[in-house]
Length: 364
Image 1: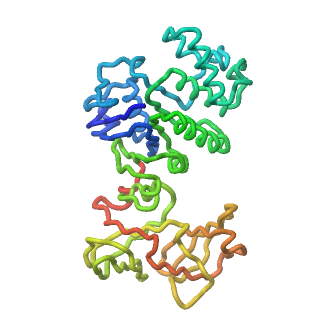
Image 2: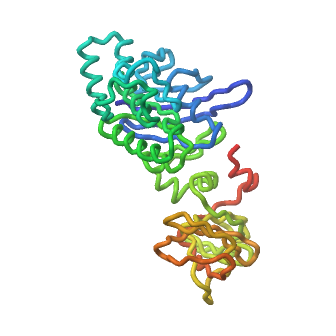
Image 3: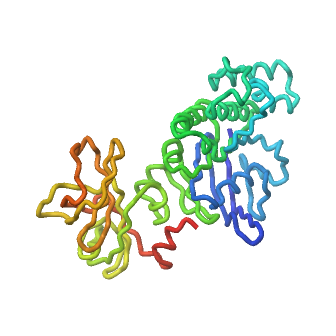
């Protein structure tokens, strides 16, 4: 399976820049998820790779070779759409064998490969069924199998699970990942589902307004992103505006509306305006004590394994906290006073954006 290189790829539609100078390297057998809000250019990017759209500038290389003048059918790329797009008048078997038949493969090869695909997607017993007789999840498995059956070198998945129910989507994403690993496929998977991307990708590419914001392993993207946009977009977080009170070699003391906290941070200056971020699962809540930030429970939402709290903290700050129902089974009630012993652990520090916080985290 191939590697993929994008270098300076740009695309404009009627004065709107859909892609702006996209550069990315994808390793052989790597599973990469492209994540971003609607309209950020995710689908345009993989359509350029597939040859459905032609970029205005830049290069697309597969295994180091340009595909600029290569026709779609000759790029050996498997493409799976969100809307599944099976042929409704064809059985499962005929849908799986379609690509091979179009390539005029020998009948023995078509039979052998089709049977292998039926076994691979565990649907031999439904081989004579038509798409209308299958569940959405089963239809998407056939679409994936059809793409694999063509012998494609590279797979592009464009929101492949977006039309499915939540439970089916959750199950099928792991099946997709296992198929890719077992077959050694190189996969570019476009999604707006953050959990989907974090749970199956080797690396996540975060996009906004036609540009790549950052690229990293799922743990890096979630726990230690380099940008405020990523921190806010991927998962939920509390963003608190503050000012640096003092610094030393590895820490900053930051004031947040009268509350001070020490946070790891380099290169900051005294009186510098900053943004402190802490995810809800890292916000500790305890019954009232003499230490920690003081607050009152404003809202409680039961989420099964978690209780989600909106806490009104002294100074007019609202902070969201998520506490395991196992850790504190009785929970807190609306109106109850609490302490919040924030100690800087799992908190991130960002420079305040030049164009303002709202502009920085905007999805548009």
